Image (cartoon, each protein chain N blue to C red):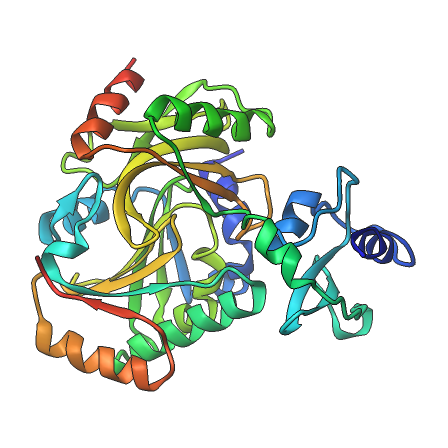
Length: 173
Length: 189
């Protein structure tokens, strides 16, 4: 079994988007990890969110709440960032799957729950690495910028709270 | 009540795929105990407080969804831990033993190091745990956020399970990042 075939067992719901070119599979994510590590503070092989401040949401486990929460949260984040539907984002995975994905933001909005449900850390970044959305193995969705950006995080926090999310804004320590 | 649920799931519908009893329990947040009977075909999704519908698990279509409301007793919820709940231990050794017990139930044998990909030097592997020969079943020891607090813990996974049900409990133990570094050094070969 090739690396792609093994990875795609986990990503199979994305197959229609792979065929349409809205999702691209890349076999070697090491440079993307290297870029993230060089821009974001790292503690113990993970982004040290406490150093830069972030928004944090504990995703509920029940099937219906899980999918709805992730979909709405991602949609709200992308909307508040004014992300164009056709902008390509990058998803990398620290865990079982080896490859990375380039994914159209519209597809991420619809399908994030399918790869945030794989038991591994998942990082989604734009190609200029100006923000990161992480789903952690422990069930947290975290969002932040490479350096403290309290004003922007505050406005996103207010927007998400008004939308009904129970989340925390963690200030940098 | 729980036997009644098992009967509803296993009878009256054709078996379709491989969701295990573990998967069903996780879907129900561990609130129902169905013994060791293997259950196939259906998952339970909450439709309102205390009620679930049983849905064909693989590629469901509206026409083959069977619906049953199941009352869930509050006492049962209180007694049974969530499947992926954090378990706290007084030492790394106790946490490790409990994590290995969870993994061995899925046929785990430690055969290769589990390498962190988030690292400064992309060419330099940092083991954070171990996996079986396929890489699909294993663990990683991390210092990170669990239940709102930074703590050392062991994450376990079985990628052969359906998605969202691949992780087990988080086995937390006392210590710091330095404690985790000292432990993971043992995974160098």
